Image (cartoon, rainbow, N blue to C red; front, side):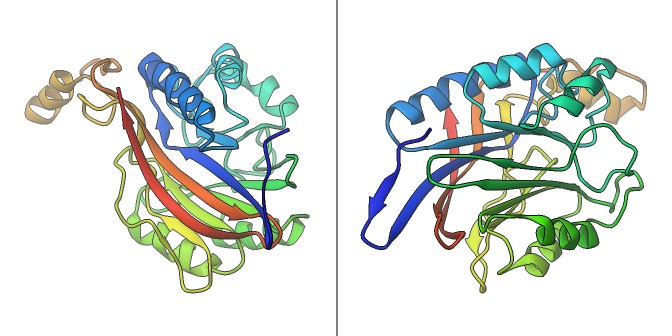
Length: 268
């Protein structure tokens, strides 16, 4: 399915994982940048958080399908997953689309999936945090349970959380047991990408795929006025200065270990 890079000591894959996609601007820059990176041979697999892909809100089934068509091999969601009620049936039938696994057991959809590639399977797990977020099950215990169910050495964990301390703690907790722990949700890319002591790739937040001339993806003035006046405002998705943010992981598919994590910000 994807071009293998065969070296004498293994098979390697470059995985692009992009931060929270915001609005049509985010969808457009995602399409253009991923197409370019694929054409350059820099990436083999693309996973996108599409949490805010519909004008800053959770996506519709049509938007999800359009993002798959534009180059995503899998999509993850977060706390905005229920914004569009029509997405429920697709969550139950589309294995490449996952929502946080530590939602209540009766919630629609799944929190883990396996992507089959020519170089081997890649397991994706989605989790959501509890600090400054709505009540959910424990992400640490949920991670333990799902890692035990995974049937591959390559395991990517996306942690959709607000608090940096909670993200760092989960990264340290899972270090050596998963390939990568990648934070999302704040829309602000952090500069702490690293390989943790036991071999897990980590970053606190992938950032945002969308308009950088904004307040985390929204038009600037209404957000400023909300802070100044305390009055309700309509927060439309911004349009200017589109950029794709995320990381490229270099994975040894035989061991499931990350060889490197490269932070990326591709502006147009």
